[in-house]
Length: 511
Image 1 (cartoon, rainbow, N blue to C red):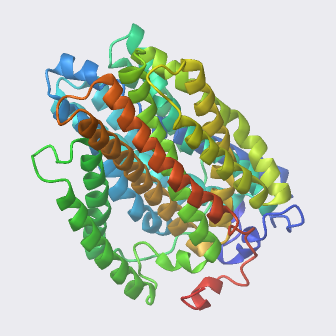
Image 2 (image 1 turned 30 degrees about the vertical axis):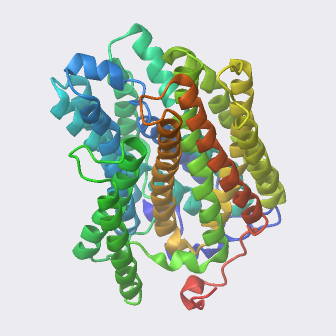
């Protein structure tokens, strides 16, 4: 079936051509039946990915309810979110290997089976421990899905229309986390917390069944041994970084009382060892995560700008609800509804942004997008304890507009600059950077806010005015960081066609 659907992987370099309208068409796009099947595969992957990514942030609003219902402390409840992020950070780097070693169909079925099982366990959980286990299983499936979606799109979609499809992917990556708190707030206002899982379960199972019946194999797997030591280093590196950043963003210490900087140090040391080992293994084509993707200057610059954008997204997702609830006095549901228009705007704009990218390339989107995001940050520095909620809505919608212009060209230009055999590794790097940048953005904003609020209160319990001052300081940091994205946006180029399958292998390290 693989041979009928797509040409062998070694004939795919034409797919990685320039993303502009004058790019050569895909060698198999002229077959209507094949094109229809490819659209079905991508559509099913998009719906499945949206559902699984939505669950990354759906628990944030539900934690107070769970604390009361399950009789657990805030530190324990926070693990329902922290454990999800940790699992994602540990599993995503391994997906580069999985997507090379196994066919599309079994990888999709494994991802959706894990997610469906985790959702069912969470819905049926009699207590905190079982619910936590269900969240970890959910996250295992979620971590596989996004790299699978990106790699499949890069292999199936011709360069001339790739931006449009990547626009749909940006809906999944940016909109799903943004509307997660809103959806959970709406569910919790009328139903029990278990319905957050019961509502999702039939969609997940339906995707699993459809995938079993309809999804063909669209890649050519190759036998590659897995380096167990790299897996261990990866778990300590990315798990330690995300856990440490999450802890610093919370209370400065982990739930067990360990200082938040300790897992960060472990993560940094393990990351250095992981990078050195991957460089050595890449010489024998055995790397767990092939870091030769960074030999593409376009990919490297796009990843740097993506990291800043994800910090902005997750930082505002955490700081604005704190501002609206603790300073302006809005309730949870009102806050969720206030943030909903921005998330919806990103979803509506994404396909149009993709079409603009296909026609004009990345810079015409990235430069104005980064300026708009920065302008929104600087506008939010004017917020006070008496700011009308309408101004908060306007600032969030403006930032969402800017972010909508950024995500699609960054994903598309960065990944399309790689050779086909590095697609899966590039997708894994993108997913890993998303998790690390999201955790870093949350940690930065919350830790700055907390430190400034405590300083303003003289070491006592911060008042609403003190909290407002802390939020102002956090947003100021974000505003200054956003200026760097404007500079970087001028250096993101439209990807050139790789000269050969091994083009990046032959590039000098300084490229």
